[in-house]
Amino acid sequence: MSDSPIKQIFDYARWAPSGDNVQNWQFEFVNDLEAIIHGHDESDWLVYDKKGNASKLALGCLLETLEIAALQQGFSTQIELVENRFGKQPTDEAYSSHPTFKVNLSASEPAVQPLFSSIKTRTVQRKLMSRSGLSPLDKQALEQSLPTGYSVIWLDSVDDKKQIAKLMYGNATTRYLMREGYDTHSRIIEFTAKKNDGSPNQLANSEFSKNKIPAKALGLDPLTVIMMEWVLASWDRFHFVATYLAGTVWPKLIMDYMTAICCGTHFVIIAEQEPKTLEDYVNAGRAVQRFWLQSDIVQLGFQPEQTPIIFSEYIRDGVSFTTDVKANTNAQKMDTELKQMLGVDTVNRAVFMGRLGHSNPVQYRSVRKSLEELEIK
Ligand SMILES: Cc1cc2nc3c(=O)[nH]c(=O)nc-3n(C[C@H](O)[C@H](O)[C@H](O)COP(=O)(O)O)c2cc1C
Image (cartoon, rainbow, N blue to C red; front, side):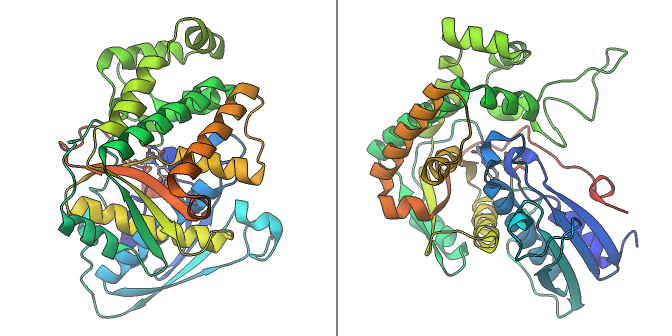
């Protein structure tokens, strides 16, 4: 089965994006035309996935990528939710933490998929981008890449950018105030790991990490990366530097404030109906992936800015995501700002937010686990 159609198609699908590159899936290949995707969320440790919604969006990205690759190779796909390995049915309440999809391929006429060529090149640009706006044609191509039921709000005036920069800065304050943020960040950023003999470990490095975000993909200067590795070594150290030495001001200015100013536009993808179910989030993820792939086709840099939406959902649904009172209060303040920016009804339907712009090619990026590593035998 090594080069069976299903494996070839999954070899493309595994390039789908996931929050913090967690790749919240495993694959079980049943035969040449059938596979099971065992999805899971990261709600037990990842502060950005407390409701499992980031994981559901990522699963949607995976399914969309899978379908694009399959159609391009001459297969139509049938995908259905099935009982998971814990014996839970899709209708059970506890199911959505481990959604499981049965995928069947059937031969059809190959149909050229314009988005196919971007599956492996689509990535995140976290560096500063050009402030020149998007052309009407690029905006139109991006809007048209979305399936029915989704629309996009563009925020590209100087005032919009300043407002979002303030929001992103304030949002980063929430992330850095809380221990839960530290626990997440210290796990998801990959710094150059050394083997026992002191030589760099090719599988874990700061440039191309296969299961984390490589430090050099964060868009920081080399000195700040070194500082960050040192500071993230322990919570006590991080907390001291953040509290008494204003140690998070510089990263917030570079990674959150300046990036929000230096881009062509911000965008918010809006669903017609407020997403509530597993299927709603998976479908939203499918829409996001089409939009993201299209941005690569028109050669625009793309960075998600998803945390304002995530924290807003937590506030709205009363999800307890931190024990830090200041972080909680700050998240409430940011939620109010987001509502003022988008309107209360629109905030509830906002599924994905980010920035776009002309930029240099990305030098460092997350790569992926191999198909063998993702496979359950
Ligand atoms: C649901 C979701 C949320 C994400 N949120 C953010 C975010 O807020 N900021 C960010 O820089 N990247 C975000 N990402 C991007 C991931 O970190 C990125 O896709 C992953 O590390 C793989 O890297 P690649 O897309 O460059 O291949 C998000 C991705 C997904 C699917």
